[in-house]
Image 1 (tube, rainbow, N blue to C red):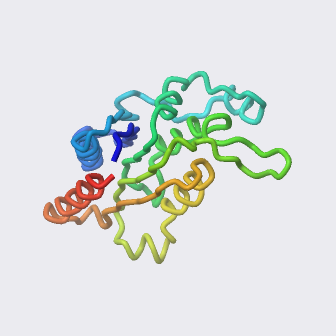
Image 2 (tube, rainbow, N blue to C red):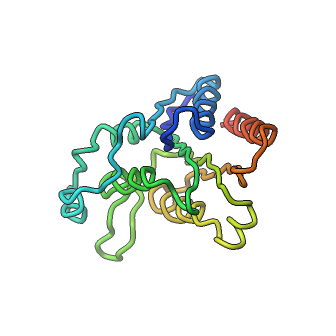
Image 3 (cartoon, rainbow, N blue to C red):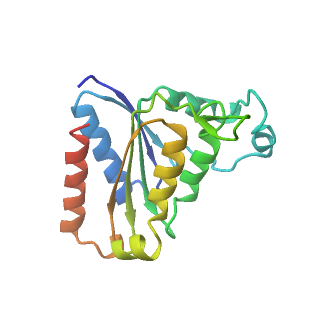
Length: 199
């Protein structure tokens, strides 16, 4: 398989966190397969998740340009694979990851508005792989049966489907993280390594 370029986006404030370890493993595994990787650590790079008043005011205008985050937009445009790594807090994305999507996945970058039909036209056709590595504090049955797996629905049916046509979406999750043993955590990381070694 030809070498590809991946953007790996990490959202966790602690460099010694399990999420950070998982992100490093993803990078190492992809690079070992001959791919190039750009690691975007949102906390380490001091990413501001707040959509500004200027950005929101211009959001629906033709030719919208997110100039304040232009450098990150270019990093996304350069990739043909996207990997998000984060813990789920309160059955949702961390605020900084939600802000990343709000500010980067914007008109002219991730999609265009179809004025005639009101639909969204995907623009991230360069992204062929959109994978997520995540953890939940709750057991899998709470996430799936009580909450309906909201993060997967949002990212797969919303972000991925609306922004990247025919993308290969996959989410790898370790559940009940607060009680997971070292053996269980190690088994999950082995699963991550195996999955990314086949990309």
